[in-house]
Amino acid sequence: MADVLPNDYVAVMGELQRLAGALDRHPAAVDRIGWWWYPEHRKRPPVATDGVYVILLDTAIVLFNSGHDRLELTLNVAWCSALTVNAAVEVACWCPQDHNMHQVRSESWTVDTSHDLADGFAAGTTMLTNVLDSGRFDPGAWRLTAGLPDAPPQAR
Ligand SMILES: [Zn+2]
Picture 1 (cartoon, helix red, strand yellow):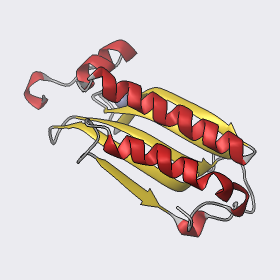
Picture 2 (tube, helix red, strand yellow; picture 1 turned 90 degrees about the vertical axis):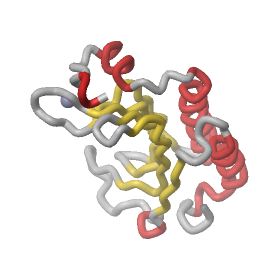
Picture 3 (cartoon, protein in one colour; picture 1 turned 180 degrees about the horizontal axis):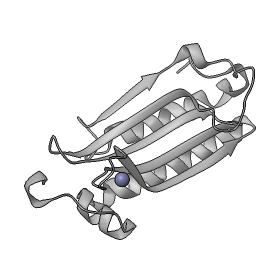
Picture 4 (cartoon, protein in one colour; picture 1 turned 135 degrees about the vertical axis):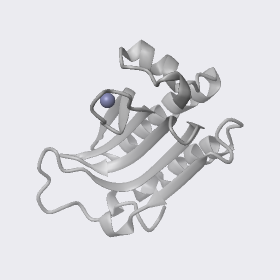
């Protein structure tokens, strides 16, 4: 994490590592979680325009994967117009037009200070932990709640 955190935020590295470690060790996440780091994105992009989304680090926890259908939890720290923590529940798309994945729950926290980063990361890991605790790992149930078309029976 030291390779990827911008200098302004290294003060909270220990806190982020603690939160990430707790997520790693969650019984429902063990063996399903992956982390990716992008040290080349450590520096704030020169032109931070809306819509630009440069990921510093991200994680995915794949809770369901049948080969056709999928449910995963994602969390990332990225340069958007500002530094942002983003967390989401994502399910495979079964619309007539393929969108690949849909975010059926998502939240973002804009970061200014290192405290904001620790707070946003804590809020994001809490959101993911709540889903891990809930045992709601059926992508069809999430699609139903979100009003999205569900997978055909043969794909489940
Ligand atoms: Zn779709």
